[in-house]
Image 1 (spheres, helix red, strand yellow):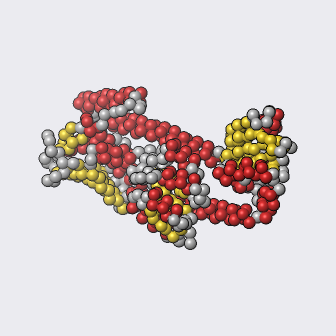
Image 2: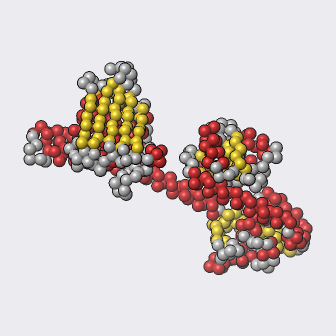
Image 3: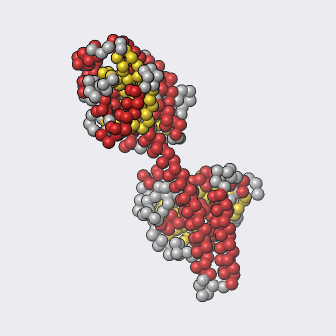
Length: 503
């Protein structure tokens, strides 16, 4: 049975991972620190895979990965983090971490990565055993020049890069184990004794061989060549990118050239993917946030323009529509100004908060939305207390919060259902309850409801930012939000506001 060590200083995460993996038949061991895990491994305890958090008190997951790499232990380390960044990714690559996963960890992903890590470890163990027992390798190594063997020994034993030596006839005379792994040769003799040209693709042959020839023509011991992003050919005719450093030297009157080859394919792909993801995430957040704010203002403008355009609209309604339009236009102008100030610190919304009457704020939002095309076919039931209900908040932020809930409720009822709004004040807190009789949400949807860009709506009908924005607002103003929902029976959103101690 494969044994997996889980390292995390948070007990809940250790237990959660153990529950997922043990169900698949793995034997699970837990460690609350990297230092403890190192002690167990140093004492001779063996594992098939290690899953470690990166950020922990004391030694980090990167430190543990570095220890495994420096000790050259064939033990795949899967790093998980809740704060992915380029620095930690590059450190993971540098110390040969098997995989780099962002939290929250997906069950299917972690099981797939663990399975693949065990397969890779078993394959490496098998290859190493075969290599050590191979009489052909021993015979090939014994035929090499003794002095050349001694000079290469330190390099061969200290690096996971491919180290290949050729003679003046461009024939491969020696190679370390990583060379066979990197180029996927089944036996050492498939490489040793062959022309170095078998490592290059046909269309790149002339280019790279001319650069190699430059080294060959230079004075011995004074010429080195650095090649970056070289396309090399494996024995199975697949290609990969590598950096190569080549040096030349004489032994017993013969000239030799040793190249150190580093496969940079995975590093480049991971860094490029991380950079691409960072750019896409940034652009998505900016674009979606802008669109969300603009839509809120346009909805308000549209609602009052529709009402003011009716034949029976009085002058007061038209004046109100004009004021709302001007106010919302000012918000859009402020949004444009904010875009020009990206990166500068902004004051917290809490600094602009004041004591508001919950009932009046609800009425203000309903005046805008109840007559719009979005809500005009919904039945709005309103229960409010006769007394003022004080809350400390920013009026614009409350409007944004309630608007998101109402519009989601309208979507959930296909714009023809019943939306009930209840507000009241108990001895401690103000309460706002919004209930709809729509399609409701599954447990899976509830688990993801606050994730940005997560939406169950059709493409083009939702940004997935509504509840994400609601979550930011309730957190900012320390509002408690309780959600109850059943598929096919509707949803209930219960907001509990902090007690207002000062008026």
